[in-house]
Image 1 (spheres, helix red, strand yellow):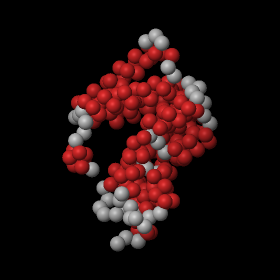
Image 2 (cartoon, rainbow, N blue to C red; image 1 turned 120 degrees about the vertical axis):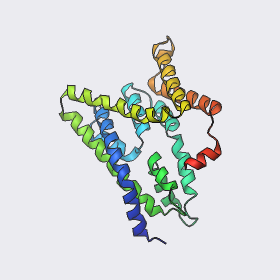
Image 3 (tube, one colour; image 1 turned 120 degrees about the horizontal axis):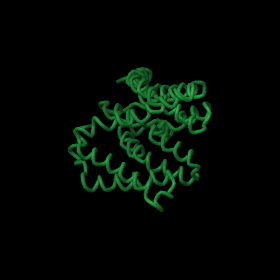
Image 4 (cartoon, rainbow, N blue to C red; image 1 turned 60 degrees about the vertical axis):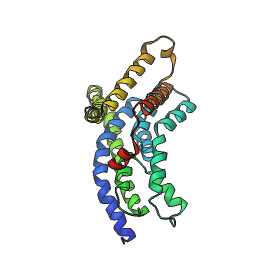
Length: 240
């Protein structure tokens, strides 16, 4: 049985690749945050207390559009709802003796990547393993945001605009490899683009704020996809 310190070191080890990947993504977020009017401190603090890429990028859209707090809360709830499911699943790997505060700490740092390495651990999951994985990952996410935001304040506007394109390239790089294999993913991506375009150019609908557009598009497209192309339980267990 691993000691607490050994579990923590193993978490650091497994979280290091996540840390490096997060730095690249959060650098783009930092640049975008500054372009949206946030200071370096605000952008860095935002990443430190949120640790959610999709939610933070969507939040920037709400901030830029001058959305309400209700709009922001609803957007974050819909986009980050999956983390509640992930945290619930990972909590089943913790021993009954693990208290509420450690479980809350593990849930706070739950991301897609940390969930993946957590469920891949054989047997019970030590919260100290999660602490190590979370700390190094959050460090990379926060440091990347700081570097991106700081660069966004001192680099020329033309260069910042060029670097901002990397944000869209990042999302394309995430979707395209999976979409070439899974036609359902391609259909979902194209449907989201089509529905977003309808909200952008159709009269009356283009009056809907960006935050509620995200909520509507996410719920509608994800809901239809779940009905038309559900993932079978056996397939989920095989991928895990």
